[in-house]
Length: 269
Image (cartoon, rainbow, N blue to C red):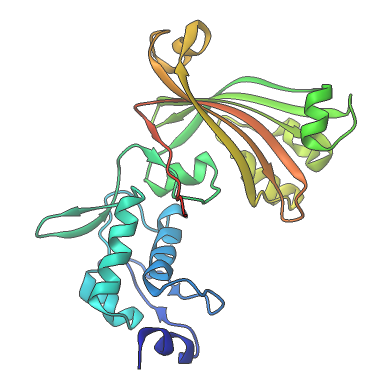
């Protein structure tokens, strides 16, 4: 019986009692509706544990042999899953010791929409912010078009310096149509996550985003906020996030320090 056949005949889906070395248990399971290759499914299960913070920076993963036993896969499949996680910047190998959750530069898994807070927690880092602007104002013509609202409708605007363990990583400016979540105006965004407030207070969950990236210099206004000289490089992300119905939720412009953030994506022919 081949690997694919083994997966489709398992009932219930493979579940693992523990993926921590000597620590509390974590539930691992395949998605029965997932038709991706087995190595990619194992990758996705482990990546979810890392990005959710269930596995934290410096924590050791199961060995290749243990992964084979728990998932019912071959050694080759386990190794491919681990290498894919390493390529994503989520884990690293320590010769003779095994695989560990990475604590390198903040990096998004390819083609996964996550908040800054979720990414930070996945690395065992403390996400905080210095709020530069938090206000309600009328939408401009361009903003109304981007968010599918009427010109002049109320917008919630938020601009923050995002920090990891007290070090500035990005300057984040975003706008949300206030009707989507009126409680945004009262949240404490020095510690709160915008996406978490949207989900908890208004059941609004961004599920897809269109993003453009541009490399440029920090300039005189952004440089001091990120502890950079005006001529030092930054990565500028412009993004529109949508909910599961395809309705725009948020537009943002985020300026990242080039040495503290890495963007990853997957390209296919």
